[in-house]
Image 1 (cartoon, rainbow, N blue to C red):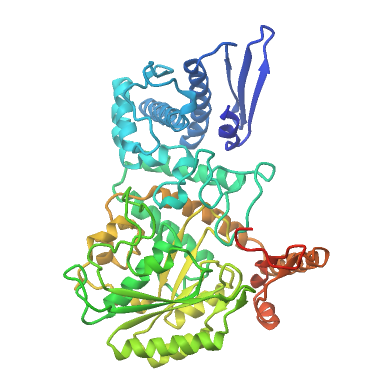
Image 2 (image 1 turned 120 degrees about the horizontal axis):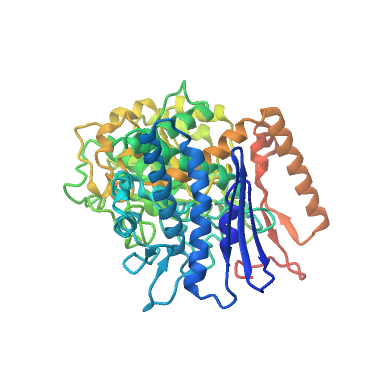
Length: 585
């Protein structure tokens, strides 16, 4: 049980269970590639205990993975190099197979009995999913022959990358990524690669489960990176260099080479909010972050479309923990201010919709309230962050970009944060925002459909001076960001980051870029035709289902200007009596 889902992720693999003539099941895994065929076959006795089943799982997984890693490593003519490659392949395969078993404990015997898989006794290995990969790697080295010690030591800094991909994708974030016993997160998505036959995909307004093709492609990128790291001498700057590569690929795909923004990568769009508030704080002439608390806020953050942006947006923008854990700390207290930021930031929220009918908030009224709040804040000596949501989860844009430009012209220190996390906009829009010296928040895990979650902040060139060496950078930032997450143009800010890499976020951005690169490979005219066709067909379905009532969206002229805006259709549900169903109903 469970093995078939494991082997689904591998290319060109067939997994079968057949009945032997002696009523003993035969479990067989076959993989064909350019060099021939790998076949692993194990017999499972009818009364097989957990230890025997664990051995079957270990042998099949180990043998199959050796084939894949060997492909990634390639061949060598030098005898010394051949030995090194053989050791690498064997060690990585052992680690992967054992970590997979340890994370799927149903294959292991109950506590008190000997835990042994293959030639490795598991008695001293960490058996809970929260154990660090580094501890597991050290324990594995002690169980294997001494010849593996040098390989284990070399791979210690990237040990997370050796873990099963479905588990790796859940690391380096918050509790939104933590799977329940069924393997689903609180948003009812899974980190396993999913085919259409196994799971109904939800809308991408929040996140989606990765497709099987994405899962396979991401896994290949992961093994390619591990091989590159090991056979290039295990460079100490591997994480920061590989994050720079992600930034470059992202800038190319989004058409940002000319704009040349400073790109800071984040575990999610919510985490990214902290960096925007940080920029506003560092612009304030009287800020003494990390030195004392403040009796009055230095920065006011105006959050537009509240209720239709990330649920943790308000807390994160106030430099508060927004969940029960953080990327680099296992336990946090939700709503607690990060050390060094007490009293620095306040947030004011402006709802996206009003009343039971869900009518969009009047944009003119919202802008009047925002303008009043901006003027009041500056009169009290505060700086302001103005959020402009370019497509909320139900497709709203609030306030207008023209309003933001007017406010920016009036107050040059105003930080305009374009919340483009849905990424339902044209690449030219991103460049235009950066030219206006707006900061832009994006993700790769909503519209693009990468594995949940991945975020980034695009800072215009003018902001690089904001993060100057003269500022004190609170160490609490290291709870959320690694040093390599920050753009190379912000070295002083990077110093406040955690020295430990976040390979969970790294692999989620790899997943996102697989989708982004495939998306932009489709000609724009074809993409627009697809959006329009899809929109027309879905809207026509409402005529057949009177219980579904579409919610008001953007004016038609705005939809025509941006076909991507048609990719969100929201509706309410009516009961037979003609009343709207409540949230609980």
